Image (spheres, helix red, strand yellow):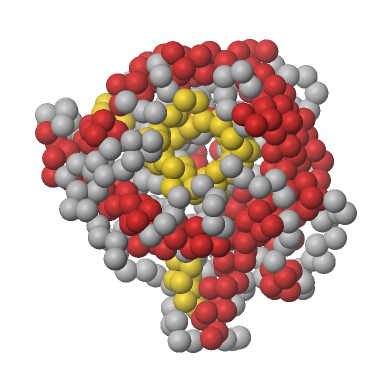
Length: 480
């Protein structure tokens, strides 16, 4: 019988990191040859983001990389997960590459290595060059081919210094939220386009993965980051509710896991969506390309879902808990209802349920034994304020992190091979359609002055990294 230690500890080899994304922190969207992305266009469209906010300045990381890397060093991070802005490196998404863009990331990588921090590079975190969207975007096969060219160039450029490569971040969001519900850039609403985007993102991963393997060989660590869903049947004894959970699992999880790890699309996914498409956009040989296998699977986790099957003619809620209409973000799942979850909740309205983290990791380890896992995003937005003492006391965030890291430990006790954890996020940033109204960072950004202020959670995380043991939640204010 496995017993949980009174104080949760982690192996000395466990990787502690923090994560960000280019459009959310960099700013400088028109500087040094960067081209426009779909998020620049989306943010400039009235009504798309709260208060019309955009990533034009964001956290100004582009001009403050030295300061930010020094901050990471002070935190004691082992690794930093960041994304490359495709339009900064290749402004039109095809053709000429931008030396200034390549140089920016080269300097960042050098600074990280000098600080003793391993760079973990994500090639694509949603900022598609606008010219590629104009030519069809992710529903178009050519976008995947262009990604393959881009991926090969960046891997060749940084291969001497970067060994851990993630092709895509959360293709579920890129496909279903970008092309299904339209709440993310580019803001299109087509169930069929969303499914086409699913496949072409999987194909892009395969082409990018081939570039990593061919350039780096055995030195490569190939990863894909997925926001896998824990969708539970409202009534576990109901066959219909269990089938609703199965349908969401197929769309959210197996639509990406199976092509990459097994070389096929699940039969139930194809059956569920047969009235929308015959999937003829999957060409001969594609699944040989998508089936890259992975050296590590990146897992992003924030909350859980509760679903039920709704009979025809019965009105249902149209929101899935992530700001997405379940009628368009989930192709073919028009009779699946996402139900309100018991609290507590974060500022995003997402429920807090660390048991979902354990359930997800243990389930993955049983389905894919021998596959290393890495928590590449986990964190929470709360209504942070600067106190009279000049500090940001964020006990809710500290508690959230403590509980979820304990849940990771429970999964490891049960046999899950979890290698590390990247808190989301290093700093407050542009939170997509929510603009600057949601703060996930363990470091606060004053958007008027761009001053960085460590929250209590940053001091708490620094102590965790130093000791490999979970500090008490109550200790956070005293760790500065």
